[in-house]
Length: 538
Image (cartoon, rainbow, N blue to C red; front, side, top):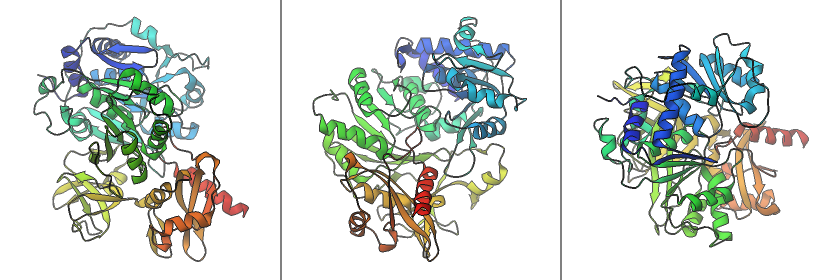
């Protein structure tokens, strides 16, 4: 009997639809049967070098079939794949490799110099596999070639019995501090973040074999833009695969809105996953500026998550794509998928995001009591039910994030929110980013959403800098649209129509481009550096 182990669930789907295309990655297209065989080959190699139950294997890879093969291969031998942020510098890599207890690493050749710089400091890291990418970079001695490893191994499915509670581990950088690993069981992450075997995410399956019964006659096509090294990337991929669909990856590198639209057109995609204004707005702008260039008639859903998608941008998306459902999702590595805001084609967009959630989500006050709906009181968003085990190697953070309330375990997400009278939740932003100015708390995302409504603002991040009188003052780091001129007074006037005076930016720092992580999330450390540098120069 199959379990809720992620590799066994995939095997059920692969056996049911072997000839369907599963992944499209640049110039490679693989069916479910081919993906299964390649993952089996890598799994047999891992077994041959005594890697198996509980061993941690790093994946320092760009988006491609190798990433998904690596995850599945690890799960097949009950090993634990660990996502590695390929933008990390030596200090961060050394911390992650050591903290995660990596014993093996699969990496693209272009990351060879970074791996070489830390591998000698990590005695546990004993096995290296390099994926060729044409970069010509040097790699540590003894690293094996990925395709050779696959060619020398069996494609057959001959593995030990796996379990529902095998470990799923994902490292997240958060907004402060060094990366930390969040531990889930396979069963809990499957139901908590991967759809639970139901393509509609409405009614989860009740037994593993039922996943095959839910596969649609025609598999959906999903364009996955976030990197697989972040949960948004591989959650989208695995959810698509478990529904018998096709996941399509963009070319590695910076986000290219035109190339994304090309992919939607070429692959006749039904879904596209984007990350906040930084991705959604450029796509929408191109559709508006060049009507008719792309055939987007296959597109059913434009989904955003992981970063702020302002109401202005969602309204523009609704106008540019009138036949497409606009979905703004909310969740985190620590909570799984929590809720979403959906607007059917033709539906109006509200002035702020109102997330629909189930009874496993609440907003708790400082005494860990639910805030009253419609009261306007702000608390911390919390989630119960299927939750992570905790943080790997960090019992203190585990105790702080996963708390017990009246005998029930809750994950405290760190996001502040209030509950509307209709039960929907309005997010204010992360408490760790809140700006304390004159005793008042300012949430950057609220100010950013207002700034993004200004027609001359392309992108923005809001941070606080030290202030002798107020403790902190609000600074807007802004990239203007099309090189347009902007003044602080102009933006302040715009903000005062929507925000209390203490939330209005006191300073403006102009930049050519707002720096973001590869998954589109805000880089507030960079924004703070820009604000402090401008403060020092004045």
